[in-house]
Image (cartoon, rainbow, N blue to C red; front, side, top):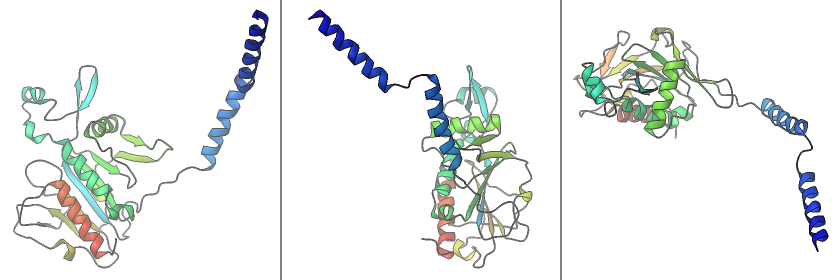
Length: 260
């Protein structure tokens, strides 16, 4: 019986060995084949429009966004009014003014819109520290704030966030001259509740193929008055959050341009 058991175990070991790669070279060859397949079929992600060309699109600038990092222990974190209140009080920073979640909510509204999926939206972020960020239209912003904060820390330290499946730059810090990235001969509008110029935004959206630039404040309090805008409007008789303003402006452009 003992000899039969030993023979049976030996046969099982031999069968298992036959299923495994013969040596390390076989494993390397399999990996190289997988890499070759990925290289043959790369995912190409294109911007809808580049810099100053005048094709039809909505260009949104989220201005005065509160995005800055702080060292907490051994790690860097995104400065936040809830997590770092004591630190901000020591540095005489008003906690209510540090609201990176406003930028997070606004980006979700913008990049999830049918306007963006149709390739007619371009987004820039200008922080309260005058840092200019370009957002690729196919960037998928994390749904949870914790992951968004980690992504912003990576961006602010490395100045670029690349796609996991290639060299595409999904988020990148660019030179802070916003006029170098928007068309010259197009309407440039700032939005604010503190103005008497209340408009139906559908009447503001160009009905031809010209672009439109809209600046939306991504901060908790106050208004934005950028140096390059030609007029300031309010899209409602009531104060709206930045995220809701983004949603209403995108909806207006979608209705005028026939995007379902």
